[in-house]
Length: 74
Length: 266
Image (tube, rainbow over all chains, first blue to last red; front, side, top):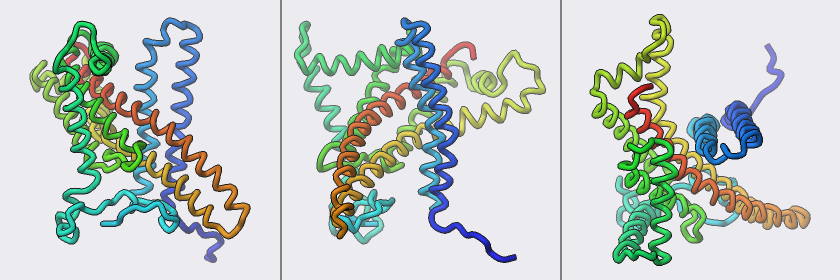
């Protein structure tokens, strides 16, 4: 079969792009939920901030794995 | 290996090689101890010295009405004790406040080297240092859990949660094992490492990219290099935020793992 198309260069960069999709959506949802919660109940904003950062850090880890693996596997 | 990063255009595009430094002792450079005393290890020792000396000096002669130094040192400790130890662990957590404060300060100071002129790289952008911090937290929360509940009860409540139908254990026990005992130290270390690594790389891309564009023969590309340098400045401010956010996140996740280990009910 004839070769119709070829991808050359860093495949790790493509992998990082794919790895960033999920955490991107997740981080968006987390901040949206925080804004909504503190708009509905402004006095809870301080108490929720700890868990905002917590959730953000946990979700963000997946994108960072993608970044590290893109360098490690290149 | 043994490559000294320079801010010249031939360093473009930046890569993993920009994170390698030569030993400061020339006779060691070609031996297996070639990485024995580099800029990175110097920065770690410097950070330790800064923290010890600062807290010793500001607490040497405590006053009822604090001086500026004492006030700042007390604010750091108060922030971690109230904002991290007490909020996350509860009243029990106050005895972990000294460790969490030390952890927070160490990470904040070592990360800060990423934006301080002449240093401009964080030791935490080498995986070795975050790994050790992650391992300390990992050993600590497992030890505290075993000490609090006994080994059998600790692993039973963690791996076989009470109150669910037994066939679900086939599914839940492996997930709990992987998430509690395998990925926790890895994510702790990799999160800190990858943030500092990516931050340094991003600054290099914009500054080296600006230099490379400035060296272009095309006058239009040359003029556009201004935007690259502007972006480098913006990214430096973003980096300052990441530095303190990551120190806070590391201390808070450690506190939350300790809380999970010493809590009575899961």
